[in-house]
Length: 273
Image (cartoon, rainbow, N blue to C red):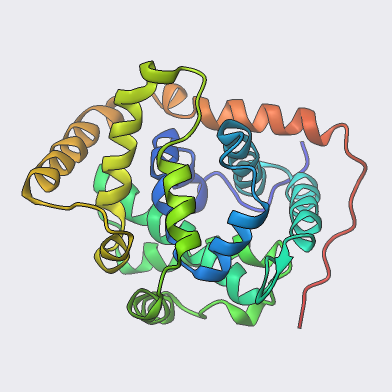
C-alpha cells in the first residue's frame, strides 16, 4: 500500500491508535467551540444535533485517514473537508480561517496528550515536542500556512495558556455543548450510563477556566468520581490486547476507505497566505 504521512513508530500513531481517546472527543470538541467563532459556525451549519453518530463517523474517519491512511487518502479526505468548510461562513467567521484551524489543531493535540498521559505514562519534553510537531498536520493539511502554528512545543504552551485566559464563550458555545452532551442516540435511556460517564470525563478533562465559563458543576464529589474513573481506566485499559484497543481505528478507517473509493481524486489544497 502507498506510504502514509507517518510511520508506525511515530508518536502520533502510537498515541492515536488507542480507541479510548474517542471518549475524550467531547472535551476536544467543546474546547474548540469555546472559541465563539468556531461555536457560531458549528451552531449555524453543523448536523451534530440531528445526527451525532454521522458526525462522529466523519470526524474520526478524517483523523484516522490523516494519521494512518495513505498520503492520497489523507489529502483527498482533507480536500473534501476544506471544500465543505468553504461553505461554513457567516457574520464574523469562516471555517477556513487559519486562526480557527490553529485553535482546532491545538485542542486535538492538547486533549490527546492529556488523556494519553492520564491512562498510560507521562511523556517527557522531547516526546511532547515530537508529538506536537506531528499534530501540526491537523491544520496544515486543510490549508493552514505552516508558519501560523506555534513553532515549538514551548511556543504552543504559551499560545494555549493565553487562549485559555482570554477566550470568552458565547451563547452558541453553550448551545453546542448542550447538543454534544445530550445527543439523540438510538439506544435512548439505555445509553444514559454511558453518556453520564462521557459528561463526567468531558468536565474533568476540560481546563478549569473554560469549565467554569460553561457553568458545569465541579464539586468535591465529582472530582472524586473523575479520579476514580481515570484510575479504573488506567488500570484496565492498557492491559487489553492491542488488537482490541485498535478496533475503533480499524473500523473507522475501513469505512472511510469505502467512502473514498467512490470519490474522485480531489486536488491538493493550496494553502492560504
